[in-house]
Image (cartoon, rainbow, N blue to C red; front, side, top):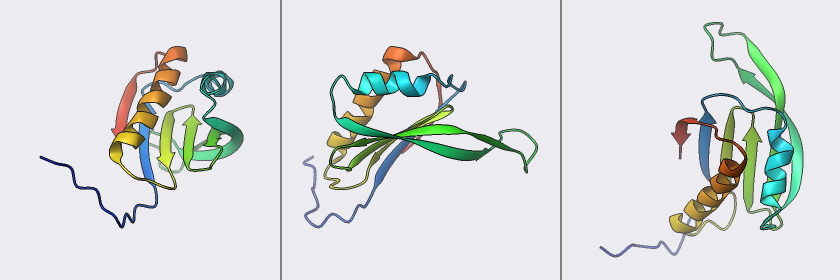
Length: 124
């Protein structure tokens, strides 16, 4: 079966989120940046403050923490790393799944080089 490519693609953003079974140490942000520098696709990083609801039975309890946003030079590719998750975003010029899949695979390969983190959930 031949794959159909749409000429008038309206996809604005593609995203893939992977949650970790055990939260990562805060040192993960700098170590992952060093891994990304091997191929130099990501040229900027930005520290982001986050507020997340807890995963407990207390619905009004929140966790305050940090996350890091890594952006490609053309601003079309973004990786967001949190202590409890990593997400990959194609925010412009999305063309085909195979290209986005390669970004996810490469980003996770870099992550696996520094952390044996177990994935508990995968959203695409």
